[in-house]
Length: 84
Image (cartoon, rainbow, N blue to C red):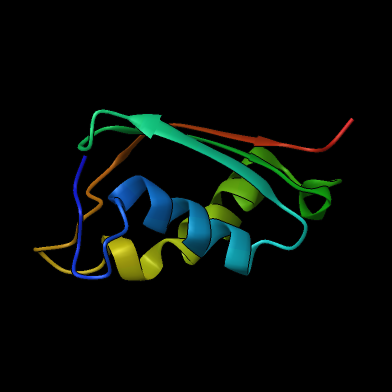
């Protein structure tokens, strides 16, 4: 678990970034601090193809994944679901 200057773990930062960018989303983040597993549920994904849904989430994580010293290097699993 990585804690930054803001005292948030990287998992918390990922969750906050996605929830801020993806409307009406519910986000679960797991992993070992290096490999992250993310599940995002949002009505925004309705009618979109898998790649489109993933692009929405990756856009939300852009700041956390940019640069050589970025805290997030890769997402091991990304599930993008529509609420039931």
